[in-house]
Image (cartoon, rainbow, N blue to C red; front, side, top):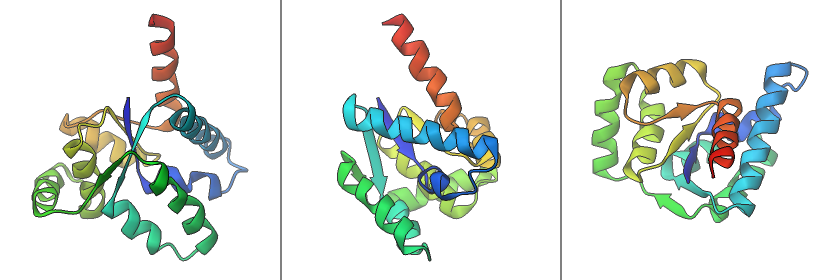
Length: 149
């Protein structure tokens, strides 16, 4: 299974954990990362992930997230084709940087795009380009797969 996690997901454990949804999404994200390390799930990393992470003003977050670049098995450089595809994706109301994430994930035939951004989830799923889920919903996919295998 090939996964693209956007920066919202990578940063979720650094958000205010007093909010129950954020705490549960953080736990789900950590579980997904454990599956990537131990179960052969493939993680996609991209130039846009690197750009956003490098521009994070919180250096401890940047360093923690940057480690996932080395764990990723697929790397998506920012090419003219990715940029063109991202421009096309913006017609669904997706912001340009988010569209670069989506285009990067689609270019590698990712099985799932994981984000905690509700607005982005709705727009991606409305586009029909890729299945987008929040980390909690993705855990249900994992559970269903394990029950049917």
